[in-house]
Amino acid sequence: QVQLVQSGAEVREPGASVKLSCVASGHTFSSYAMHWLRQAPGQSLEWMGWSNAVNNVKYSQKFQGRLTITRDTSASIVYMELYSLRSEDTAMYYCARFDRYSDSFDLWGQGTVVTVSS
Amino acid sequence: DIQMTQSPSYLSASVGDRVTITCRSSQTMTTYLNWYQQRPGKAPKVLIYAASSLQSGVPSRFSGGRSGTNFTLTISSLQPEDFATYFCQQSFSYPYTFGQGTKLDI
Image (spheres, rainbow over the protein chains, first blue to last red):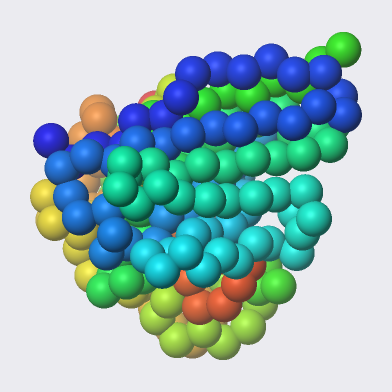
């Protein structure tokens, strides 16, 4: 089955970091760029960055210096680590596969809730 | 950054109605515009890509259009499962950006 399965919910204190994972199955992981996006409660979606098939990365300027996306191609896993967390980082975080033919996010993980609170 | 202005924010309709949601981009971006549906507690799902191409498996009552920097998503005859939130998204330039969303309610 073609799917992305994300790691479970996380709670962190302000200033801490969090590392999420996203495991791909049922498709050729190495052929796709994998993106991370987030959605604060009741808000729209926000693009964070991607890791492509040859381990290049690109981040939104908003997260420069605070975000690292890595991938383990042999295990079909992509990771997202966000540092120096603040309360505004409380959100649902999604990994998504980007299809270069349609230039759209055609497969999404189920989401991981990250709560930042003291 | 390209700003995506989506309207309306909220839309009340009935089963069988025809509805249209609009998204306007702050810059010219040809057809790099996608539409997603998000049901409560679920991840988004792509409906339309490249402004007017129907994603595989999506019912034909969904259609997309473009006129300059204005993009539309039309649902020709609402079904009960269509009541959800819809987002537009541009993949023309980084950072990829989304509209604010349209909640379609009964």
